[in-house]
Image 1 (cartoon, rainbow, N blue to C red):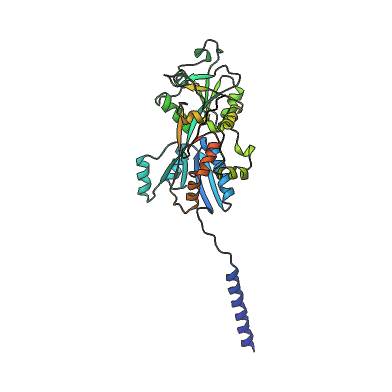
Image 2 (cartoon, rainbow, N blue to C red; image 1 turned 45 degrees about the horizontal axis):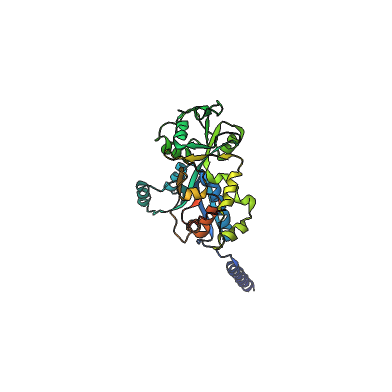
Length: 333
C-alpha cells in the first residue's frame, strides 16, 4: 500500500514538471526589428538621432535603441574597443581604423547620412548680419578682438566665440577649416552644452555661438506627435516644405549670420537649399558606421536611418539628407 502511494506521488510530480515546461514562455530572438541595440552619437547630432529613434521604436515597438552622446573621440573609442556596434560622427573611418577593426575580425559598414551646416548665431540686438570666412577665422584666432574692428558702426565691445565643449568635433572643424589647425584665441569659450551656447548668445549681445543648424529648428516632438511624423515620413507622396523649415530657423530666438566666401560678395544663410547647391560655405558630412550585420537590431536601425523614411526625418530637421533626391522649386511672384 505504501509503495503504491509513493508511485502515485512520483507520477503526479512528474506530470507537474512536464506541465510547467510546457507553459514556459518562448524566448524571443533578436531580429532587425526587435531586440535592443546600442549607439554612440556625436553631441552635435543628438536631437536628430533622438527623433530617428522615436520614430523607429514607434514603427517597430519591439525594437529599442540605447543611445549615448559625447565627443567624436569618445564615439570612436567606443567603436574601436567594441563597446558599441554603431556610431554617428562627422567623418568616415580612416584606412588605419578600418584595418584595426578587421584585425579584430570586425568589418565596418559606413554610410554618409547627412550634410550638416555650421551656423553662427548672435543676439537679435547685435547689428551684424553677415561675415566673410576670413573675418570668422581672424575672430577665432584672436586677431579681430572687438566688433568695431569689423565695422566702425558696430559697438566697441569684445567678441566672444562660444562652443559647446572644448573637445567637440565642432571646435576641431572650425579650427582646421578656418585657421589651419592653429591655436584658438583667448576669446574662445566652452559652455558645456549646446543649450548653454544658445543661452549665452541670448544673454550676451557680444557673443557668437557656433552650433549645428539642426539645433535652430524647433524640436519636431514639440510640434508633431510621433505617430504623425511616422505617417508622414513613410508616405512617399508627402513632401517636406523647405520654407517651413527656414521659418523655424528664423524663429529660433537668435539671429543667424549669413556667411560669404572670401572671393564672393554674396552672403548666404544655412538654409537647406543653400547647403544643397553649395552656396553656404561651412558644411560637413555626417556618417553612420556600424559593425552589426543586417539581421540584428543594430543593423535594422542602420538600415532605417539610411532608408527613405530615415532620410526624410533628417530633412525635416533642417539638415540636408545625403541619400535623398531634393527638388528645389523657385516660386516667382
